[in-house]
Length: 115
Image (cartoon, rainbow, N blue to C red; front, top):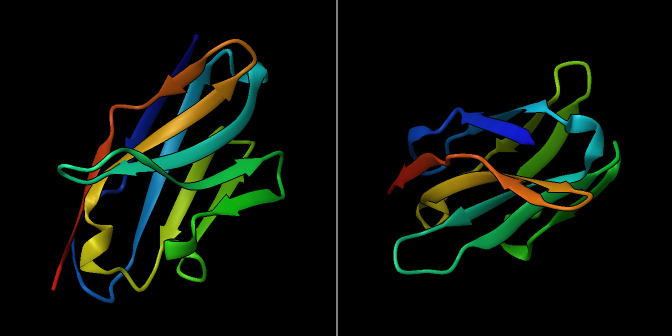
């Protein structure tokens, strides 16, 4: 089992920045990749960014150049640095861990960007 705890969400004005954190515990040796998803009201959950190993990263087109995913293996933590935030980035952000047999999810953290 893997436990994920997100933090760092909040309310920010358009153009502002936030950094989300996802701390993993439990059977973390079986985690192959970590990702951030988001779900806005009335919309499907979408993949925002992912990291496999320490350098292989993925970003959805709408956040490229604004968001950066990184990981600190010593702290078992993955970060999502979000800059130049837009109102359309408003959503609940979820941390995901891709395990060998299962996927694990955090509880989510709300990000609200005001115009």
